[in-house]
Image (cartoon, helix red, strand yellow):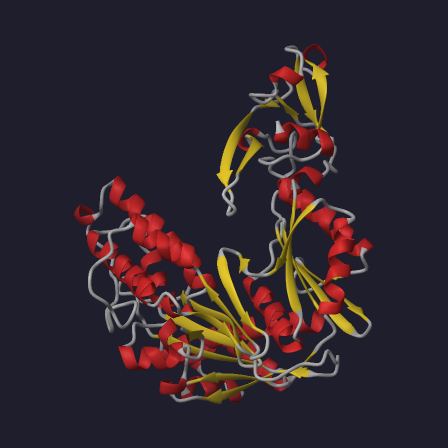
Length: 502
């Protein structure tokens, strides 16, 4: 009944007699989903079975994908919030997908949902006037509505991230970011209520208030000391509830020096074992993205075996889980160095560190890239990634990792500059391979590296334009090192402290 009232309130559909439908029309049915919310109440949602929509008739393939704010953008905004002593408040748009409109002339018809029969005659179907949950274009249609509302409120869309909106009010920056229907506003205490009230004029919202949880993470903040920490206690609890974790404790997430290898066909687990492995690895992927960059390399290795894993891989997965549970208070720690008074002329510092592990993949001999970027010494991105080509030397592998790190640094710079802020140039990229540094800093093109022209010319041009400068850092001081290999305990802890606390 609540869902029906919500549909009526938003004018989601019109009843149409079955006899009046066009010939051969595609009438889609729907299903019900029940969700228990964090406050213990239940939420019933009627969702169209969008997989039955037909391209060119019920939707256009070009309007299926909706933008979502980038992880790096979220951290940039939060670091600015900390430095400027802003407050961050969350608002959740009610029935977000019911606001979208069909702008491409589509006519989508739906059977009367189960439970709605008492409201309609037997000989009708529902012609959708607004998008509904499950419709392929619903997320994109809502984003268009949200974008229009932001423009009415006087906000500009960032040219670097389509889900970042900003404006300067009384010489102070105000920022909104949207993760589908979850919207975060960051502003001065004196401005935040005004911004939220303006937003509520356009949408019915749940005003969550000051950010205590975000994207599945618990958010702990100390405004006096100027820091913020992400942890995921609910996810950690699921490791203990759903998986039989090993006894004892570990000082690192992965066995030092060990590399997981593909298993023989006869060692591949049956369906139930593979289901457990995929579920557990998926949870670890979410955790390493948001709160535990220290398990990046170990989780990346696990993710390579989602289609064919052995009990040995499951054992390695549960080791990572047990390590996370035993270090439950540890989490991504954002503490920028300095304060910001809101001045547009303030120079923000961006830097990065990159590293690689040469020919680590025993099958394809691919190398692994690891890199970390910082904004005013607070971590923004931390990545561990198997390289997509086979590097022919250690220097080449290091160069590939450096380019990947530089790309993240450029993105952070563009996010800041899109909001009319300044970035100190040149940005510093540190790496521990002198050969790669020499290759970037000189203009010769030898036969052995000619096939890498595009990559090193990219970095050379950034150096020439004084956007990035490349410097050497000792391996023991390079915090990208644990993104490429399983380190022994003391070195692992030393690097982790640059990203984590707890």
